[in-house]
Image (tube, rainbow, N blue to C red; front, side, top):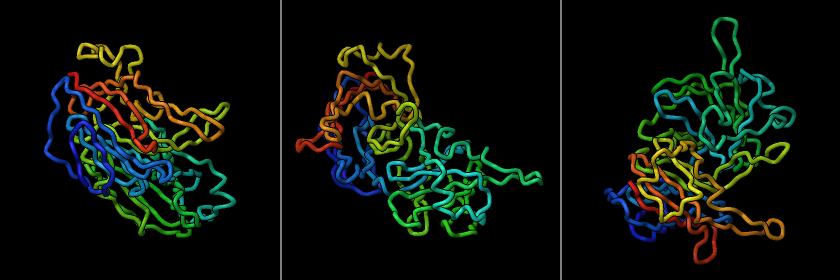
Length: 344
C-alpha cells in the first residue's frame, strides 16, 4: 500500500493492511486538494478510503473484508452491520437456537422485516438496536437474549443466513453465540474489544474470524469514503437504499455544514458559537452531491462546492472543506475530489 502527500492524491491499489507514514502537520492556512478512488458503480464501490486531515493521507481497505463490528469503548455495547457489503438483519421473538422456527427460511425468517443500521452511528438505532432489552425472562431470575438472523447478501444459497445471539458485554469483550442456520448448538465466542480502534470487526467467511486492521487506529483518521445502506423516506413508508458517502470517525470528530458564508470567507473566527454535529453521517451522501435523473435510471451526479463543511478532527484542530468533483478524468464515478484548509 502506498500513500503520497501532495496536491493531488490518487490511491488506486491497496490491501486491507494499513500503514501510516510519519505525520506532517499542516499549518493553518495551507490549502490541500486531494482525491481518491473508491471504485466505481461497476465494481460496487469496493474500497473504503479512510482520510486523515492533519497529514493529508488515505488508508485503504476492501469493503467486503468484514460483515459485522462490535463497539470497542469501555462502555460500548453496539453491534453494527456492513450494509455496504449487503448485510441485513432480521429479528424475531425467538430465544433458543433449537427452536424449529430458527431454521424455517420461507415460512418464518423471510417474513420478518429487513433491518439496517441508521447511518448516524447511534447503537440504539442500529439494526440490532439495544440487544440488552431483547430478552425473555427464564423464570429463574436469569434472562435469555433473543436471536438475530444475519443475512449475507453476497451469498445466494441457504448458507447466507447465520444465527447470532449476544450473551453479554463488559469493558473488555463481548460474549456471543454464532452458528449456521441449520445448527442447533453454538459455543460462546469471546470477541475482545480492540481499544486502538473504534470497533472490533468480524467476518463470517471461512467459518468466521476476527478481522485485524479493518480500520486504522482511531486517532489517525477523520472520515471515510464508503458504501453503506440506510433508510430513505418514501412516504408513507421508507425504503432501504444503498449509497456512497462520507462517515465520520466517532472518536471526537464533529462537523458543521455552512450553506451561507463562502468558503474563502471562513476563518478561525467563524467557528465560535457553531452547533457542531457529532453524528457519523454529518457529511453523509447528500448535500455535497446530488443525483439528477435523466431518462429513468440514467443520470449524473452534481457536486456542490458552494457548501462548506467545518470539521473538528481527532486532534481538536479545525478545518474547512468543500467538495469539487465525484468523477475522474475518464468520467468514472467514485472519485471524490475535495479542497481543505486548516483554520485553527
